[in-house]
Amino acid sequence: MKIAISGKGGVGKTTLAALLIKYFRDQGKKVLAVDADPDANLALALGVPDPESITPISDMKKLVAERTESEPGKMGGFFKLNPKVDDIPDKFSRNLDGIKLIVMGTVKKGGSGCVCPESVMLKALMTHLVLFRDEVVVMDMEAGIEHLGRATTQGVDRLIVVVEPGRRSIETAQHVRDLARDLGLTKVAVVGNKIRGPEDEEFLKKNISDLPILGFLPFDEKVIEADLTGKPPYELSPAMVKAAQEIGKKLSG
Figure 1 (cartoon, rainbow, N blue to C red):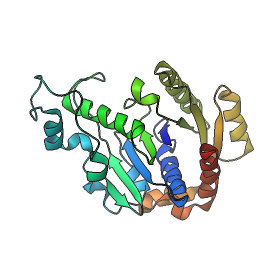
Figure 2: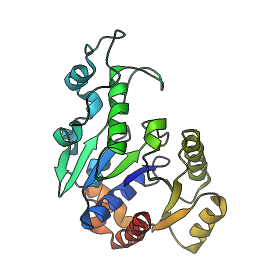
Figure 3: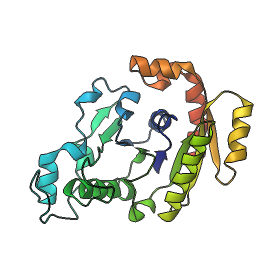
């Protein structure tokens, strides 16, 4: 199963990713957690003790140069467009309680359409993760789902857009939906987060009527406490764990 999670910054997509990763691990699945958000926080949400020590793949200059046959720091020139990446998840992931975590990083130069060794490496790796790995792969994406391409989307079982009760969050969800459809990905669903009561649920149901809603995560100040103390949200918020379990069951079904 391959799951990509997107949404506006601050809506709680990393929290949902961590909760689903725990759910699938507890079900005895092999889980590969992928942090594909430039503002990488998934390691912290999973309780990795020293997240700052993890080097993103895009920052591994020697590895990128070796695999793409390019020269580090040199603009232009020739390089491989199909670098070897199949060994990267096992060699360069951080293992934590049966979970493999890999941090993708981002290309910090050029435009969004930059064709450079780093971007080629990330795209090739993402394609491998989605199409050829046999684990449950949970990907914490950026709102623009830039790491996904046309080939990759065919292997994604579900793109989940996390939304909170608010107009800007809904607009982002609609933007992600349109981007996904442009790429041919129609398996898009929504999870509502920071839900204070039935009114918030009805607000989202009314304003996102064209997308299936997998479930709702309650507003819980324990999640804020978990973030402040560097603990996974599932250690402090039983209510969030229970809600995520129901969402996980729907995904499995």
